Length: 278
Image (cartoon, rainbow, N blue to C red; front, side, top):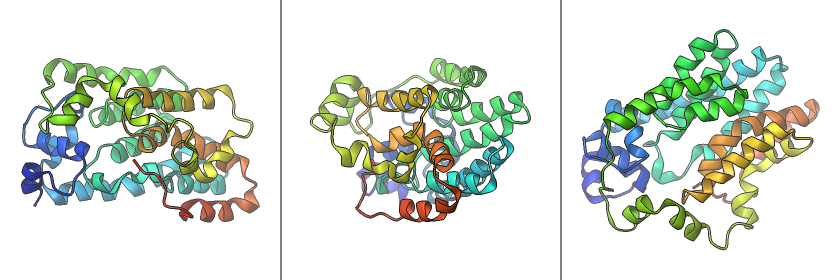
């Protein structure tokens, strides 16, 4: 089924298609050429992609709880942080990228790595390096979340991949090739008229917006970096929430009174209006 999809482009979004092409050994444009691990393992086998996607959810939630408890948060706050995180529409992502995506497994590994660093920074860097083979920005995200330069050592496999795996033309051509050739120009075109659209830029955060109350400069920096991505990419919610979702969920769970956490989580995970997910 997936092999046919690679040829006719049915049912999958452009990012998913690029991973399928990469899984068949077809050159793909930057930065998709750097995300070689999952296409190498899963190729065009649906079961493999579904297993990775399914396992990523408990890994993400469990690692979040583990990290926050070890970091000193109350277990209720830790559990709420995990629930708020997995409830974000951008973490789920668009239907056309399920299960063929690298965002969810990479984010799950980064959170797992953050928990591991509470015991060993070296071991944590190893986890971040593995995540970097899935998504090249993983070490940078880890550095922002931990507010440490050490995770940047995990960029080494990204550098190696950039040297050994040369990018190619977009296998689907057309508009997608134009996006690959002119990321800034097309990003501005795709976001034109929507920079102040609250349903796109703000509403998808749900209860996580409470984390902005009393936010320190480090959290604001992470959020700023997350939104700066929109200057070079055509997607929105998926991108910003995979970068800023973790620290904002933690901040929100910390700010909301403990007695209100269950209600806050319920209000957050239920969609009161179909949210933007791309």
